[in-house]
Length: 75
Image (tube, rainbow, N blue to C red; front, side, top):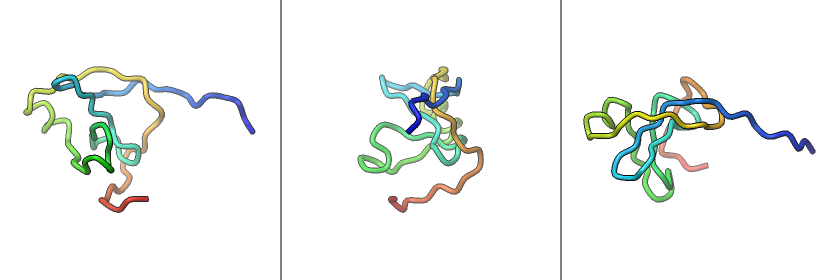
C-alpha cells in the first residue's frame, strides 16, 4: 500500500453565505455544495453561482475530470 498523498491542485471554487461550492469530481465545469448528492443533488454552473451572488475564490483540491457525464444516479 502506498503512503503517498494525492496531489492537490489550485482550482476555482465559489463562496456564498458561508457555503463553498466546489467543482464536481467528474466534470469540473459543474459545481456542487456540501452533502452532494445525498443532502442535495442540485448542481450549478459558475455563471449561475455568480448571478446568485457567489464570489470566486481559489481552493486546493484533488484533481477533477474535465468533461465527464454527471447524472443523478448514486454510486
